[in-house]
Amino acid sequence: MDDKPAKRATGGGAIVAAIVVVLVLLPMIYLLSIGPIVWLHRRGHLNVGPDSVIAWVYAPAERAARACPPFERVMEGYISLWEPPNTAAPIAPQYLAAPASPAASATYSAPTAPAEPESATSER
Image (cartoon, rainbow, N blue to C red):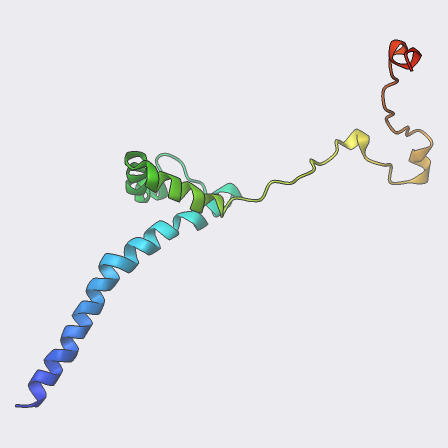
C-alpha cells in the first residue's frame, strides 16, 4: 500500500511539468522564433507572403502587437536584433573605384574636389 502514494506523487510532478511547458515554454518559443523567421526572410531564404503558412502562424502575434503598444515595442526591439547591421560607409560606385590594372590607370582620373568660387578666394 505504501507504493501507490509514491507513484501518484511522481505522476503529479509530470503533470505539473507538462502544464508549465504548455503554458510558459511553448508561448516563449513561439514568440522567440519570430526572430529567426525575420532573419531568413531578410536574407531571401524564406518567402513570407500574405497567403503563406508562416504569415498564418504568426498572425496572432501580429494582432497582439497591434493591440498592445508596449508588446509591439518589445517585439520590434527583439526583431531588430535579427536584422543585419547597417554599414557606416556606403560602397563607392564603380566609377569611383580605383582601376585594377596599370593600363587602365592611364585612362582613369580620380574625381577632384570642386574649386572654390572666386569671391571666396578674393576675400581672404
